[in-house]
Amino acid sequence: LKASYLVSERRMATIFGLTIAATARSTLSKKLQLLRLCSANVSTLTTMNSYRDNEIGIIKFHTPDSKENIMDTKFMVEFYDCLNKFTQDDSVKGIVVMSGKSGSFIAGADAKIIASCHSVAEATALSLKCQAIMNRIHSNYKPVVAA
Image (cartoon, rainbow, N blue to C red):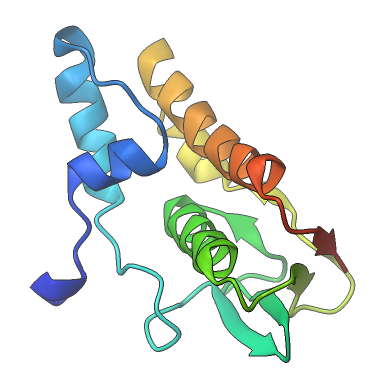
């Protein structure tokens, strides 16, 4: 990845509302290293498309190499960033979230990520990442519709 697109551990901790205690720093640091991904930009998204249709922000999931959309770490970062982009744009009046795959919306979390948690702290960090996305939708003053 190009250095200009890398996301710092501090930014990821802020995005996902993680408080890194000294005792959990190394465990969370390893997980956050996985999240050094491209920041959401239409040209760099890999698990979804993001675009506008008049005053509506559209987020269309399309996890590559998978029959169904799954939430992995890259998906979570991109989805959060897309939500942020549309939430902060005053000209966007609402957000529609949809699947680019016929027959399903999303299967859920990637089982490989869940299995990779080797401690309660790692599982908690993963849960907090998912919760941050839900909190972002909930705290948004614009309507968010799943279609």
